[in-house]
Amino acid sequence: MKKIKMLKISQYNNAFQFQSNLIYCWLFRKLKGGQAQKNGYNCGNINCKICTRKINQEKDLPSKLKTFLLKGDNIKIISSGNPVELIKLYDDFEKIKFNKNDKKKYRDFFIKGYERWFQPNYGKQFLDLLNIDTCIYCNRNYTINLVKDRARAELDHWFPKERFPLLALSFYNLVPSCHSCNHIKGSPNIDWKNALNDYIHPYNNKSNENFKFTFFYDDTLDILKVETNAKKGSNIERTINANKILEIYNSHSENELRDLYNLVYKYSDNYIKILIDDTFDEKLNLSKEEIYRVVFGIETIEENYHKRPFSKFKHDIIEELKNIK
Ligand SMILES: [Zn+2]
Ligand SMILES: [Zn+2]
Image (tube, rainbow, N blue to C red; front, top):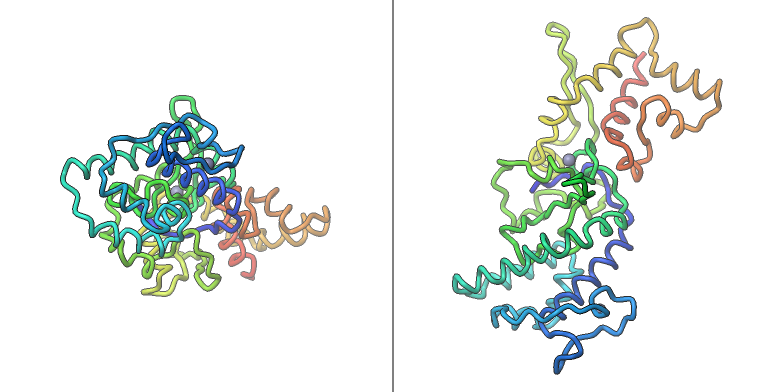
C-alpha cells in the first residue's frame, strides 16, 4: 500500500513478458473458453502456459464485465498497460453500474484469481524472473517469505487490490516487497486517482527522483537519528513518509548507524577511510565493490542494492562519513 521507490527495478523485461502473456491468455480463456468451445480462444503459442492447458471458461461472469473486458484493447491494457493506462482504464470501468451480486462476482474473479490461482502457481516464478531479492520499498527484508514451509513471493499491489480488483493481476501493479511493507497499516489517505502525480511508482525510473540517507547527531543526548535529504514537499518526501521509511530505519537500524559512526568518531582516525582506502584497497588490491561487500556486507552499485539488505542506507551513510576528517 505504500509508495516509495527505495530501489530501482531496472531490468524487468523477462518478468514483463511472462506476466503480460500469462494474464492476457488467462483472461481470454476465462471469457471465451478453449478450442472445444465455439469461438474459443487459443493464442497458438505451443509454449503458452494457459492455452496448452485445460483452463475452463468462467461461465458465471457478469455480462457487463465481459462486455467491458472484450471492448477494444482492454485486456491488453489490463495485462501489460503502464500505471497511467491502468488508472485511466479504471476510470472507465467505474462508470459501469454493477448490482451487489455482480460486484461480488467480479471482485472475486480478480482477487481470487490473484490469491488462489496466480500467487500459488506463478508468484515465485514471477519473482525469480524479476530477480529482486530485497523489498523495493525498504531494502531491509527479503522478498521471499516462508509460509507453511513454502517459499512465497511477497508482492504488493501498488493500487490496492481491495479497492482496484480489476488490477490485481496487472504486471505494473505487482511490486516485490517484504511482508512488513506489504502490510503497513494506517498509511495516509492516499488519493489513488492522482497518486501517480504525487508519489513515485517503483517501475518509474526517472533519474531525477532520488534521495540520500543522512544522519543527525545530538551530542547532548548522544542520540543518532536517520534522516534523508529529500526536498520538502517533493514526491520523494511524500513517498518516504507514506512508506514510513524514517520510522522504520530509526526504530530498527540505529545499531547499524552507530557502528559506522563509531568507526569515524570513536578513534583518533577515520577508520572507515582507513579500511577502505588504506587496508583493502592498497594491501589487497580489491575493487571498490569487493571492499564494500567484504567489509560492510553491502552492494554499492545502485542496480545491485536489492541483492543485500541495507545496501542503500549503509552506502549513503558510509559515503558521507568517509569524507569526514
Ligand atoms: Zn496462450
Ligand atoms: Zn519492506
